[in-house]
Length: 104
Image 1 (cartoon, rainbow, N blue to C red):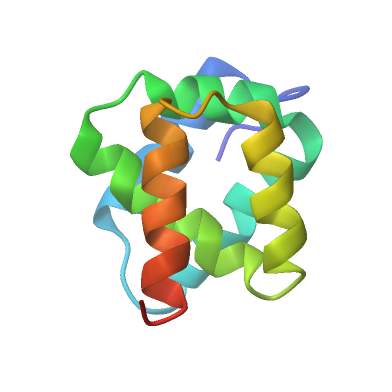
Image 2 (cartoon, helix red, strand yellow):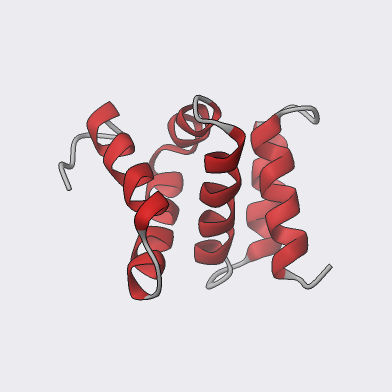
């Protein structure tokens, strides 16, 4: 992967493409990379996610939530709620992914 300061466009595209084609251990690696991207530039990652089709946003949200589940998922949910408007499709996808992760 090409890495740049923050989340460069090339890096985001490559990471999102890897998310589409990954499975198993590769999915876990993408989840970890998404968490790192969120931690370093949450606004940039969320903005980039919003530019993708709903199906991709759902996949990215699921992988991000999965990666965040290794830490404090409640704190992540609080943080993302503060960053996004209630009607934001990325927030909706993340909320659905959290519900799915929690078995709801």
